[in-house]
Image (cartoon, rainbow, N blue to C red; front, side, top):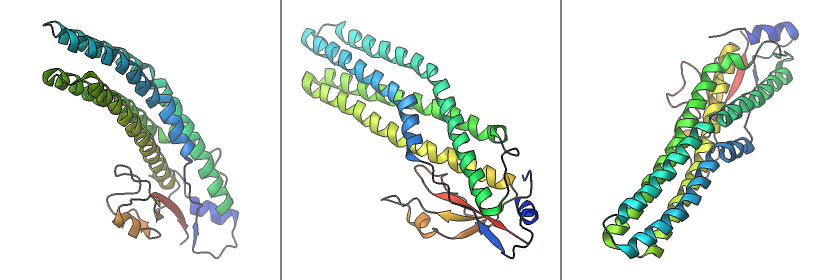
Length: 268
């Protein structure tokens, strides 16, 4: 819902303009924001599992050599203890996620203000704030906290599978150790991709909200230029849409979509 009419404000600032539309500057969020999210909120969990993996490998090696009735319980206790410790860590990371979301919003708001000012001469500094996009911020925070926990849970499951399949098959310790370390490495790569995707998700939501609160209904699809794009998204690059004519899968909505929307201020 529009909170103000940017087109009308722009006409008042520049009454002599004869342009039918003004395309605002495209806002492409810097990749450092994704790196910051990964390092502050996802990497601590990955590193915790990397450290736990070495203890679990040692427990597996000992268990395999003993082959006693209680030995599998010992290695399970090592895995469960690590998971409990990391679950507590996930809770402590929530403020880090919140801080990242707020800093991302602040940076995007500054770029949006600059794009509007440059294109129309209207300064929105006193008209927009973080409170306007609270729902998107809270959604992003909760989503990331859930994803951090999921990274941990998936890592635990992969390690457990490697350990207990190994015990059942009497797999040599060096092979199980390699599988466990590879599982942690895969979690690291997955967490990196998730952080990048979550940056796209949040900034896409912010772009949509800022555009709508300014009464802007028209926008241009900007493709991400990723190496392996969705072909239908690639074909939409440069196409102009309104909220009524837009496809259902909006820019940045689908998993790992890096496309963006570029606002167009239209004049009657």
